[in-house]
Length: 68
Image (cartoon, rainbow, N blue to C red; front, side):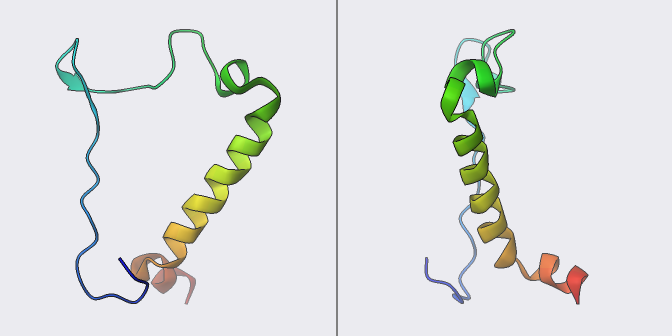
């Protein structure tokens, strides 16, 4: 979808945990953290996540309305 498009945004679908039959609540095993999984790359992964979220939010008019 192109920026500025008037068509509706795609629906976000939460993956289902096939063993429990309900939506996933975490992508980590018990006692795992971002740092324990990604080790030295954890800071880079977090920075990329922040950039992606900010790029999504900047194109959301309701967020822009809050900032004036």
